[in-house]
Length: 428
Ligand SMILES: Cc1ncc(COP(=O)(O)O)c(C=O)c1O
Image (cartoon, rainbow, N blue to C red; front, side, top):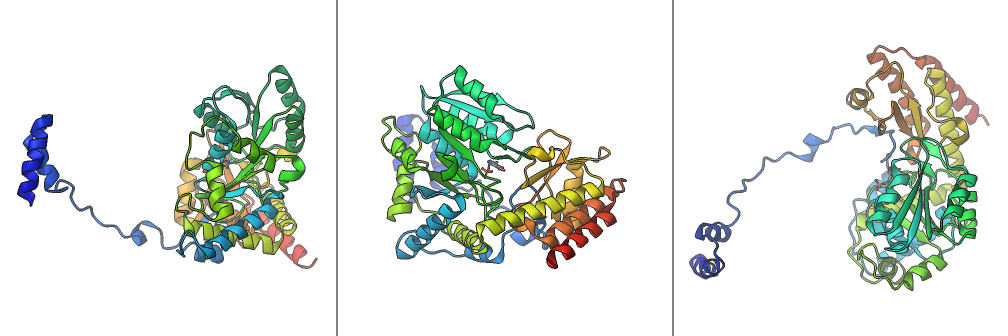
């Protein structure tokens, strides 16, 4: 059999001018690739998993972890119930009545990409409000589909409606993109509802990234008139990364449905996503465990109640901010436009943050995040991060970590303040 193969492939190879040895190595299988050394996952991952207190991903509750270990068929009656449940609960969390709300097998950036690709193509113009890494990403995505992009830039500050008005009056645009919370520097676009309203009144479609803010602070798709909103799983939802959500207003979905320019993406085509999410038909094989995890995450949010959840996030974040200040830290973002879900904190005494982060993971089992070029570190207040035991541990290990680098902070005072607040809250 092998010989026959050799002869026939030899004939082909000589016809195309390949060497005989090439054919031999091909027919004999991948002998040059040796079996790799096997390292069990348990040898790679620490026995005690670090508590994720950075900018995301965040810890997931046991219900979500359990769901993430289940595989069922991606089509059929059971999955229909799951998909419908996800849509119902997502409408509540996004505060929208749209029927065009879909899960995406991909990171939040894929949801951003679906949004941008749906509304932009060569000849269309986008105004991108860039105040950091993630809001700036919209610019890259829009240029990627051949749109004409103008970026307004704000470094560490939110956009003001007047400033956006000026830009919109100076030139005509089709689409405006912005983020509610810029994770990279801990800034919140406090005039977002006014900016959306203005852009809509001038005929633009508006895409909003709510990746680190949906379910951690007020976000109202319908009341604010947002055309497309996106979120990922690994932040406020306390679910896994890689399964995201996108909501199109009915009108915007119709606009996309009627576009004559071909969609460049197949996976990220909302009309194909509609088939799976609304009709139960095949689009691609959905990441079933991730979808089930998202269901459980949404169920926990819904059970807690959105208002209660937002309140819990705000209170936890405010307490943490206060205790960080008692400790001796200064917050990077002024209180007026500080993001409560991701706090940027100024480093002290030139402690090498890049070394501090692995030190804390290795010696204290807690992970925090660095920053993109700034001398700050970032801690998250999203989902399960907003539990008193997690916040207290974070304060404790920050104190220990800085002490290791020779900086003494008021850690005991901060912990005492934290405990005082907890006692006060529990007696209310
Ligand atoms: C505000 C914001 N937008 C978008 C993203 C991109 O998310 P992903 O890494 O899931 O693509 C992030 C990630 O941190 C983010 O914080």
